[in-house]
Image 1 (cartoon, rainbow, N blue to C red):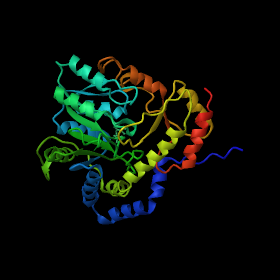
Image 2: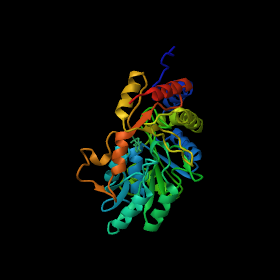
Image 3: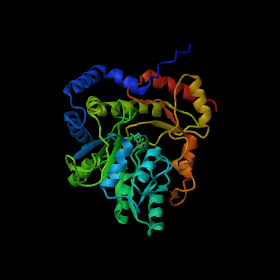
Image 4: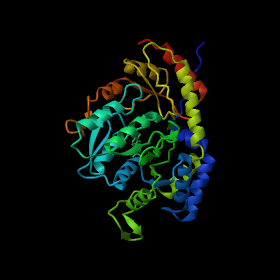
Length: 374
Ligand SMILES: *Cc1c(COP(=O)(O)O)cnc(C)c1O
C-alpha cells in the first residue's frame, strides 16, 4: 500500500510557526520601544551574528545586494575597476558589481562543486593582466563553500581583494574556517528563505578590519561620520529594528538549523540511488545545504514526475546570468567560456530542503526519485 503524501510546508511560514512565540514577543518589544531604526536590537544582532560567524565586525544593511555593493565600496572598488565573479549565481551578485560602478568579468564554475573554478580563475587573471581586476567574488552557492584555500592563493599572487558572497552559506566552513572569514570582507543576505532569514529584507557585511567596518557603517547611512555630517558620499541601506529583533531569535538557532539541514542531506545522499542522477559532492568542509541540488540530464522529466507526486522542487538557476537579456552580448567572459555554467542550468534540480521538513517527507521524496523512469 502507498503511504499518503507527507506535507512539504513552505519554509518562511514553517519557520515563523516554529518560533512564533519568541518572534511575536520580539516584534511587540520593538513596537513598544519607540525606536525603529538603528537602535538596541540592531546593535545586539550585529554582535550576536558576528559571534555566530566568528568574525570581529558585522554591520547590518538593508539586503544582500546592498551588502555586496557596500562591501565593494568600502574596499574602494568602483568606476574603471573589474571584478571577477561567476555566472552560475543569483543575478544579484552580478548586479551588485555594476551597482558599485565596476565591470563584472564572469568565470566558469567547476563541474564537481558548482562554484568558481580556481584553474579557470587563474587563467583568466593571466589573460587579463592589463585590466584593473581589483577583486574576486566567490559565491558559496547552495551552502557549499567554494575552494577558498586555492582562490585565496590565486588572489594573493595577483593582488586581488576577495569579497565572499555568503548569501547562501551562513555558518558553512571549509579548511577549518567559516565562510566569510577567508577574504577581506563578506556579504550576507537575510532574505526569508536563506539559512538565516528575516520576515522581510535584510543583509550584513562582515570583516575583521575595524576601519573597513567603520566605512560600511558610514556608507549605509548617507556617509555620515557624525549625525547630519557626511564624511563620504553614501546611501541609505539600514536594517530596521523589527527585522533585527526577529533575526536575533533565528540567529540563536542557526547552527542547530544547519545541523538539521545536514541530517536531511545525509538521508538524500545515502538513499538516492539512480543511474541518471548525480548527487552533490561530498565536501571536506562543513556545507550548510541552503539547497540540496542533484543533477540529471533529464532534469525536466524528473521535475514533472516529482510534481505529479506532490513534491515541490525548484531550479537554481534556470538561466546563467550572462545569457539573460540584461547582460547578453555585453558582459565580459573569462578563460574557457562558461560551458559548465550553461550545463549546470540544464541539469540542476533543488530538492525540498529546510530545517522544518520531516524525515518522512524526505524519505518519501527519495522513494519517488528512485522510482523515476526517465
Ligand atoms: C539571495 C542572494 C543574493 C541577494 O540577496 P538579497 O537580499 O535578495 O538582495 C546575492 N547573492 C546570492 C548568491 C544570493 O543567493
